[in-house]
Length: 242
Image (cartoon, rainbow, N blue to C red; front, side):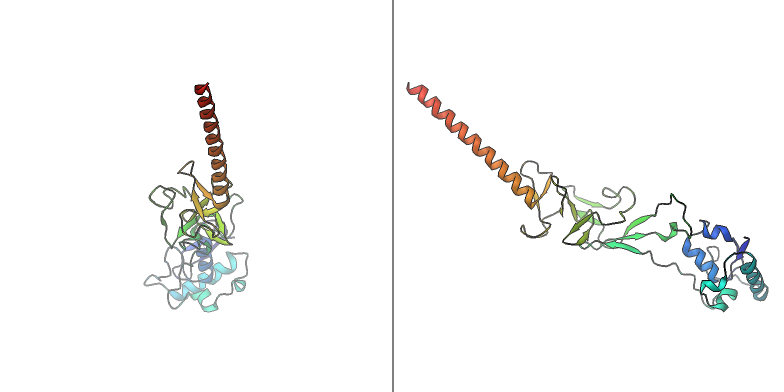
């Protein structure tokens, strides 16, 4: 394979490199469709010989690629001569999931996606839109990438409550059973996802079931302590009367 020339500015692009990481996948698609390249971004330089460029473009499409240009489903005039208006437009990053609480979205960064990715390629995911700043977990306000997300965002929601996805700022795990609960008291105590502060450790968040279980254990323990103290006092009183 050889080079494919940009239909807008004539810049040559290695056909193999277009598919294997010289440019992002969306850029390679626009280059092949005749809508421009990263060099010109769809803006035609002044003083170009358009007829000569169209001929060079045709030759490069036929000789520079092992693909059939017709299979690209591009407008034939644009494919050869470039668009009449600037159509070099980056597509929106696809949304993988959206938090039902703060509506922050996790998106796939298309600038790091290539037409043919290496076997060890890892997608770059980012938090976008929504409210990326939260007041939770007793640590004051924080933004993603500062504390919760040290690197990329998760490909799937880390928390699900009542079938809805939630981000790490809106939900956390119960410190006892790992069930997902809301970070703050955002729902009534008897609703799904309700969270409670542990009576043993104020830094721990518990679900309703674990909170009730811990509370009952503590009550039984204190009742036993009260009974032992009462018994001890009674024995001391008997010894004093003897």
